[in-house]
Every structure is written in structure tokens, then in C-alpha cells.
Length: 310
Image (cartoon, rainbow, N blue to C red):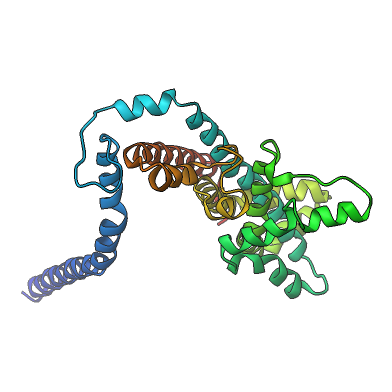
């Protein structure tokens, strides 16, 4: 009889634990509700509203929206400006991502060593991150400006001709990539530095015993174990670079013409300067699709290259 009672108590206790666990899970979901409401109001609803607007010829101000079907999409793919701004957007996204990760990793490898003024160097590299991108753009504008710009003042001091760097359509997109890289390379550095400090020294001690060179240690130990940090940096940098806006507005305003426009600045110009909100929304849908596809591809690619260090 006592054995039956004990089993009955165990059954009841197990049921209570399951019930409490279920109640805890339900109460935990209520904690997500405020964040879900905010995301729905400010991200999900505007996104689907933008898709709806892309099927109209709305000017952005009138009360009426005329349904035009896929007319705006046909116009977008036939517009040569679309391919120009897509090319620029890919340059800003991919170019900035490559440079930020390469330079950020080099900084992290340097700061992971026992060097003097490590804290000062880390602070100096990270400091531009806390500055507004718009302010950063204006700071560099006064460096590259044709009239009274610091760069041309230096060239004139050496007896050389001035250059109109921001007015050169072949050069100014690369200047934007440089400024964006300079500002946000500190984020990549910090993430890589955290990843490096999480790698056990035992791996390097074993490699030194086996006579592995510094390059072999980096290739076979550091880089594979650093892949989670690479994944984070790649995805963040791609998303940030593809939606670049502030720096472009401050440096070139998207000019000359549309030579340095990104999809973000092009949408802004379409909506506020040309009062063509329907077409701007269509460009926004294309930009969202490009960001989604590239970020997912990067996430999948680098996730598959992560190794288990446990």
C-alpha cells in the first residue's frame, strides 16, 4: 500500500510541476507582448502599408490613392536610375562590410596582444561610433570640400592642383564607403576582440608545442573559432551599409545628379522632392528585398562555417 501511495504522490507532484511550468511559459509570453506591440506599430504595419502604397500613384500628400497595379514596378525596372542606385547601394553595403571586417579584425588582433596604450587605442578607434552619422558626414565634408577643404589646402600648399573629390561621380561613392568604414570599424573591432578573448589559450599552447607558425595558428585556430563573431559582424555591417543615408546626405546630397545616391536617399528624393510617394514605396520594397536576401545569405553562409569549441 505504501508503494502505491508513494507512486500516487509522485504522479500528483509531477502533474503540479508540469502545470506550474505551463503557467510559467504562458506568463513569459505576456512579457513579450509590449515589444510585439511596438514592433507591430512601428515596423510591421508601416512595411505592409508601404507595399500597399507601391501599387498606387499617390503623391504623398493628397487624400486619394489611385490603384495602378504593377505599373510602378514596371517603371522601376525600366528606370536607369534604379540600377545606378542599386549598384551604389551594393557598393556601400558590400564595400563597407569587407573593409570594416578586415580592418576591425586587424585592430582586434593588435589589441589582443600585450601592447602599451591598449585602452587609449581602443577608445580612439571606437570613438567615431558615438558620433551622429550626419555630424560625421559634415566633418569629412569640410575635409574633402572643393572650396576651402582641408585636402585641397594641403595640395595647394605643396603646389598641386585642387581636386573636386565630392563632385567626381567615379570617386565620391568610394569616399562615402571610406567615411562609413572609418566611423563604424570600432564596432567590428570590439566584437572581434570579445571573440578573441573567448578563445582558450590551451589551443595556442598545443599548437606551439607542435611547431605551428603564427599563420597556421590564425588559419586553423583563431579564424574557425572566431566565426560566430564574423557572422555577427557580417550581418550587421551588410544591413547597415545597404541602408546608408545620413553620411550621403551630408557629403554629396546624392549628387552630382544621382551619381552617389543610395536607395534610401533616392526614396527620400522621390517622396519629398518629386512628390512621387508611390514610386518611392516601390523602391523601398526593392531595397527591403535586397537587404533581406543578402543578410540571410550571409547569415546562412557564415553560420555553416562556425565550429563547436566545447
